[in-house]
Length: 232
Ligand code: CTP
Ligand code: CA
Image 1 (spheres, rainbow, N blue to C red):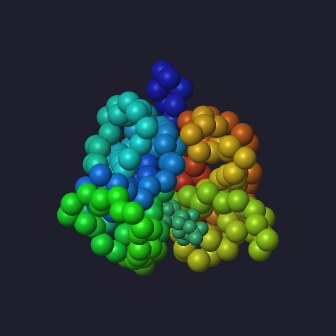
Image 2: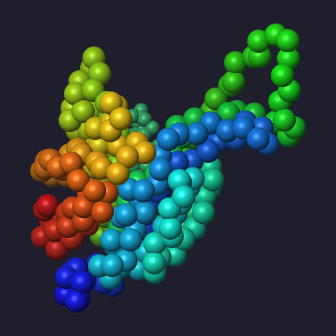
Image 3: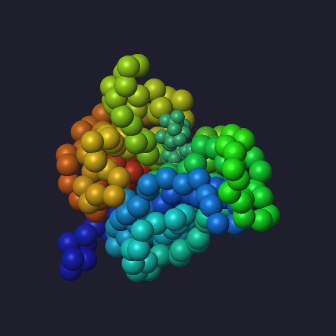
């Protein structure tokens, strides 16, 4: 333990964190994007570095936030760029945390020139599926690598936030899934988060409303417990 009271329990580990939202270009000035601020991923990277990890932060678009100290920063604009940044860094990583909001689809055509306004309605924008980076990480996982996913869920007619989270954890095959409740102004562009931490062994714990640094601490605590004791 250091004077700041933080455990050095990630010492000797290489952790990779993805953060922010990807932007998928439509033409030289326009893109399909999302409202991820990047703050949760940056908090995860900062806390991991404070706890002794070697950290690679693969950052898509974020609001203006300072670069975390002592972190290797890799920039990635699109889902494809994020994929190569994450897969490269994950090759020798002990832990990978996918906190980035990755666009599920991208415009099929990126026009070379700016699309001009016309006096009629334009054709619909055709979209192509992006690769699922988390699924690819799980499929390629090296022995002993811990993989953490994030899910922003709203309840809907087919189930509540927790039900969707459980189904997503099973589908993705990662070790831990952090489920954020979104909608009603929660999670996006705000300082606080709340949700559930779900483990592949069925363990479930609520995450109380708190700062993104606090959530980061809980995620790293769970990762350390999983790696050291096989359970959260
Ligand atoms: N993710 C990813 N690559 C994608 C989409 C998502 O790696 N193309 C990752 C995210 O970084 C997150 C997790 O998968 O850690 C869950 O993302 P989410 O969007 O909630 O899941 P999807 O499978 O895309 O399902 P949906 O958007 O339909 O809820
Ligand atoms: Ca998605």
